[in-house]
Amino acid sequence: MNIGEVAKRTGLPAKTIRYYEDIGLATPIRDSNGYRVFREADLHKLTFLGRARGLGFTIVDCRALLALYEDDSRASSEVKDITQKHLAEIEAKISDLQAMHATLTHLSKECAGDMRPDCPILQGLSGDQGSE
Amino acid sequence: MNIGEVAKRTGLPAKTIRYYEDIGLATPIRDSNGYRVFREADLHKLTFLGRARGLGFTIVDCRALLALYEDDSRASSEVKDITQKHLAEIEAKISDLQAMHATLTHLSKECAGDMRPDCPILQGLSGDQGSE
DNA sequence: CTTGGGGGTTCCAGTTAGGGGAAGGTCAAG
DNA sequence: CTTGACCTTCCCCTAACTGGAACCCCCAAG
Image (cartoon, rainbow over all chains, first blue to last red; front, side):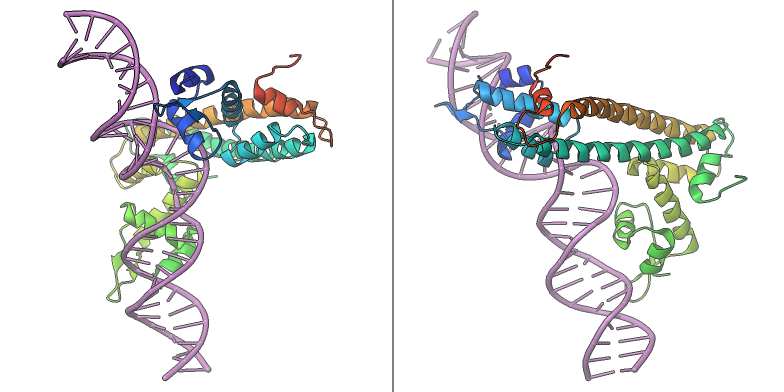
């Protein structure tokens, strides 16, 4: 299977697949013309990578998960640990974003958004806490 | 005021302040010894930048906001537009993260997390949808 | 035979928003 | 005079790709 076909099946851009080979996450063999040739196992690994990345795991995490995926004797606790850490990071990010959202919503509500130059958003950003 | 003092007052690392000068967001003057000298106005701009960045605005947004901040005749609607777009992006990110969180929580719950190799998380990532 | 188009290949540069650290100039105190 | 804190520039590094240039390969049509 050539890279284009793999891209179609996994949904990953060809560029990304080449990149994954570069950093050692995929190891297709080569045809006599230099083209990459992907086997079923390569396809499975790339599909796995695509899903893990889609769930926000970093490449470092993916590398670890992939190693565990290929190790039949792994303990499921190792996988669960990585996942729990990732969940904690996601929760932290959500909290951050929600705090930003609250602040901006508040500032935005007070701003008329018309042609006048008076703008509570800029006042808030400048450090003037106004009549809070 | 030297850069160290500004760093203390704004909470921004000196490196960041130099970077902001590099990209044209701050324009301190120079002392005869080559040291940067920051005036009150520079301090205000940097404080503004710190807050805007802290609320997740990109540097591009900050540049626009700063221009509006310094333009006494701006219309508040321009500021509000940038803010609303940013709010929409924040909302999209929160949704993404919440979806990831739900999926991972689901997978994680089904995983015993013990010494056995059986792991529903890896099964989920591999594309096996199991008994869903 | 040649041309065209649609694969594929490598390599280089750029993205965000700075961070780390080296090599060296400056300043104030003891 | 020296020490240590502060400042300067410069260059490389990060994550995870993406875009583009220049070039090779293969097949079918005119």
